[in-house]
Length: 224
Image (tube, rainbow, N blue to C red; front, side):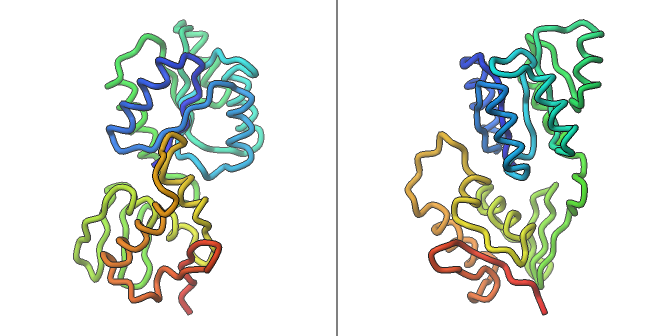
């Protein structure tokens, strides 16, 4: 899963990024509220959760969150703030935040709240995806082929899940890279292709499941 951290305290943001990446999440950082507003508004499906500071340059976190909710963007939001009074928490929650954490905080508590938010089922997002003999449990991150478990790396799982959530659509390499890797990743340009190659071997793909769309990306075709 991919998380956006919107925090203008760079040291804190980097600490959060490192901690969350160690837990298996891909993480991006944005320092400005207005930039975060635009990023999520333009691409609603890029992130699974936003950790949003309340006091930000450009636009404050409460205004950002309220704007998303007014535009039917339902991405989970964990709001951070140095303002820990009850009224401040209520204000943030009423703006549409799903949870509220006052600074300073222990990373373990933040991680527990992140995991709790991500366990909530998304609207119209099934927890188990199937295609032919392949089944993936998105909460337990378990993949099976003909009811037998398959061992995938986290990135391979993220690539497969994204493709299976977009069956019938052409998914570009940039789409996959953006979903499974973060800004700071400086991998070679063939990263996606390498993961697709490894994934095909593990899911017993004879070339008919994950189709290559030359010059564009990949596609899992709707079954007739």
